[in-house]
Amino acid sequence: MKRATQMIHGGPNIDQQTGAMGVPIYQISTYQQNSVDHFRKYDYARGDNPTREALQDTIATLEGGAHCLAFASGMAAISTTLMIFSPGDHLVVCDDVYGGAYRVLSTIFSQMGISSTFVDATNLAAIEAAIKPETKGIYLETPSNPLLKVTDLRGAVQIAKRHGIITLVDNTFMTPYLQRPLELGCDIVLHSGTKFINGHSDVICGFSVVTDPELAARIRYIQNAFGTGLGPQDSFLTLRGVKTLKVRMDQSQLNTIKIASWLKTHPRITAVHYPGLPEHPGYTIHASQADGPGAVFSFELDSFETTKRLLEASHLAAFAVSLGGVESIISYPARMSHASVPPEERLRKGITDTLVRLSVGLEDADDLITDLQQAIG
Ligand SMILES: *Cc1c(COP(=O)(O)O)cnc(C)c1O
Image 1: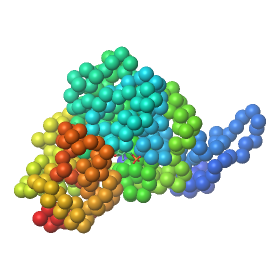
Image 2: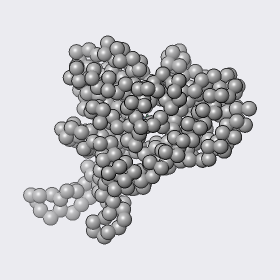
Image 3: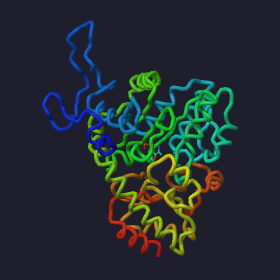
Image 4: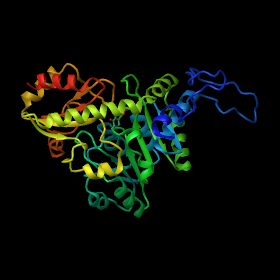
């Protein structure tokens, strides 16, 4: 089955009871049992519900992983999955990891004795140099946020295997349509399904996908114990969203290539960071491990005044946090996703006051260009 087909037929898509063309919203918390000795498959919806399960099966198929768990948010997926580690364990993490992941690692997991070293993961030698005897995992995001830096996933997996540790990848920017880290040897794929997978800016959800059944059982145990699973209504909406993932991603990506190429020639734009441009330092590695550059990129303007004008005068692209919706979203990393990072640290990472991130939606690309043109001035 090709990916577009998997999006429609990759999970149970017909209700067996009624023939309904879709798995209904099982808005139910508990299930009646017949036998004291053998409970039915479903007993209590914190553990599982059929709508969530249909979504999980679809995402597992798309990621080429045997097991998927759906969570109440991307951060619920990330935090619950990180609970597989124990006090004394150490992680090597890409230094431009998603702000929420940075926050839980640096303020919550660190207090529980699970420490992290943040490294420039575009440099495989830096990843390897940070590994200590107690290191248990490498945590990556590629392309990263907001500078779209690319990590060589096959290279990182080789390092992890040499040290007997696991590799975790946040695959939110790419989605399983464009990049499948499990097929490259990674052990755990994490997602904020809130973004492209659902795609309509109306659900918060997340996923953890693994091949190893024991790892899946551990994460499932923690999910049920903590109660971080996704509810049936949001599972249903996300199932509906994922059916159009391919066509949305294809069109948004075409728009992005057009807009990024135009911005590159604009006199007020000093840099464009997009792995779809041949001059991007990660272009070749990205093309070797993903099926496309995606629909999020960032760029730098010539001054803070131009940056402010663009953010405030852009009509079509909403000035907001988040990404991956059918509508374009323009955001300002220095005061949004990376506001909690101290200014010197932020500048060291290249997140300047003139850096803007754009998530390109399904509007007409020429309309978006005309709007950006008037806003940049
Ligand atoms: C949004 C996002 C998250 C967090 O997901 P939520 O659904 O907001 O909890 C994690 N990683 C990346 C890359 C994201 O963009």
